Length: 65
Image (cartoon, rainbow, N blue to C red):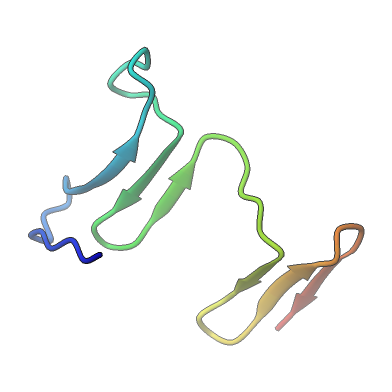
């Protein structure tokens, strides 16, 4: 799926519950690629665009740069 919108700073996506205030929410993604979460991100590996990575086997975090 592809979503196209202008690159206006106020554009993006926001995930909220129907009972949340306008300024609340669980996650948002801005049009310039910034991801914000209210709590946790559960992933086994993060790759940094400059080449480093953060990975975990569930008990140990490994940072490689």
